[in-house]
Length: 66
Image 1: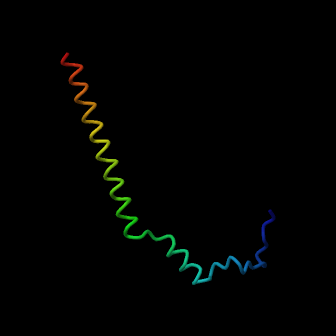
Image 2: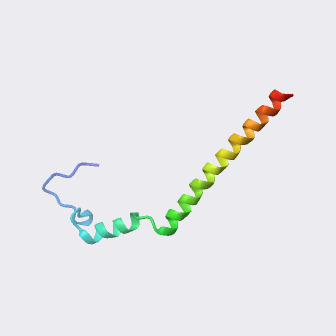
Image 3: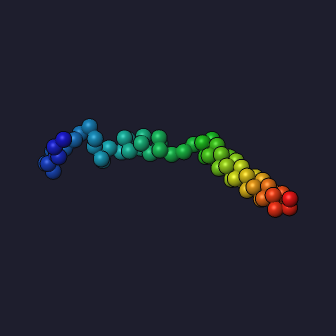
């Protein structure tokens, strides 16, 4: 695809269109519910990793004790 010269103006992709920029920004922002879901998901993953580490350490102690 050829590059456009500086003299050409793409009116469909106007970088100075405030309405288009506002719509894009609104779509990019994360809603409160989505932030809450992301936070809960991260918390569950961290809790699962901690549980797996504890189980691994307990099993290692059992193997060493036998």
